[in-house]
Image (cartoon, rainbow, N blue to C red; front, side, top):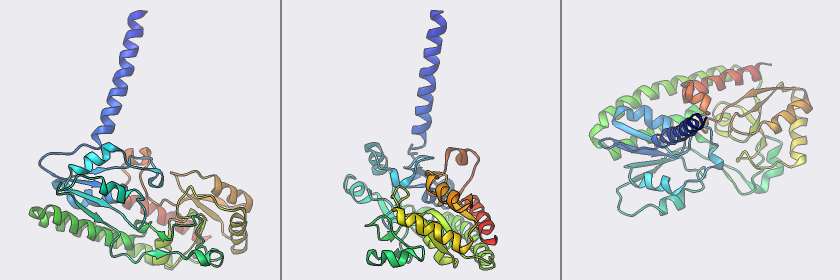
Length: 318
């Protein structure tokens, strides 16, 4: 009996150890390669595709964690300080970036680059909150006046991919031709995705989408849609009762059939609106990260954006 208990404890310890190793291996730097640290999944995807086997990409935010809720730990600072390139989105997404960069040791040779550079950012105006809400642009965050969700639009993702390519060449000029070839291949896929979004959404009879949080401003702007958000730029922002009533009123008056929710945040508010307005629920993924299930299934930015397009067409065709 004692032997069985001892073996059970040993097995449990091994499972914990292996799990820990699996977690740490995701943040392991590789000698002999250009080590690139990215702040969140979309940049990890772009850097991996463009860098290919010439780089080792380490993503700071693990699968299943919402970027708005994450802050770096001391080990993340250590990892970044030993890398050659650190890529972050900017536009206010990573509120911790300034402190993080200031905390890095000096003269490490680390190149840091903001990947939203060159994209025309969407700015809110707090003084026009009440007026803007009727058009789906109300900012419930009271202080966040820049929409950071640039990557959710394929058109913006193309700009970000070019930024990633340029940063990789700066960090590792010896492999410029490899990076440019990989970039050209990815850019072709992103351009095809962009054209599909443009043509299919332009033909959709309806143009308004009701979403759980205000993450689709660039998508809406680039493809002629109107975004009505239940919560603000941060998914944990609390909407006011009158905001919920306005959204419900809009849904009923416009005859909207679907409310879009996200897999990595609570769907409770979307369910509340759907119940109140007798509408259905569909996923619209801001692709701020992958869930463990999506990661295991081999999903990536392109496949998830394709699913987004199909769900948008379902909602806009009704």
